[in-house]
Image (cartoon, rainbow, N blue to C red; front, top):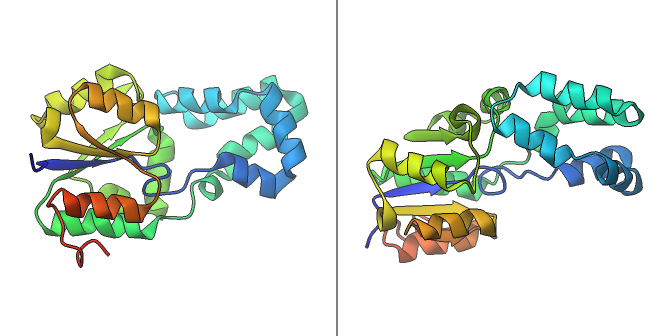
Length: 206
């Protein structure tokens, strides 16, 4: 079945998201490893993705870990440096699909304020035909309920949807709903998948 809509994850599909890489550059790999061993920074970020306040959540974690206070605050104060660079080819694919009249949705684990902040740097984040942002939905992938919410809101389900994500657990959850999926490992592979699905020509997918 030719998909009726295409769904993009954002982190590591449209924008690189590599906090460890940022901290390695900012404080050195050894110190970064020591911090991540004692502070659950990804768990902190999960709270933000679930809709908890961006600043308060991170600053509270910083205050609770005084040995790492300044470094944890970087997750907030220098956040845009973690969410970079844009994966330009993926953005071109998004725009090419829309130019062909194919609806493009987002389905992303992203905080409310952090998404708004990102959109000031990356205006294409305001261009989806439908947004499914975990912070607003108060649930994150791979919770099955978030995929059900996409179907209920869009009126599309199963193989009518083609979803790209960089995490295998998120892909597996979508497959259980019968969605067509693509495990994103780079934009060229995603481009090839969109061509094979009959949504873009090879020229349009460059």
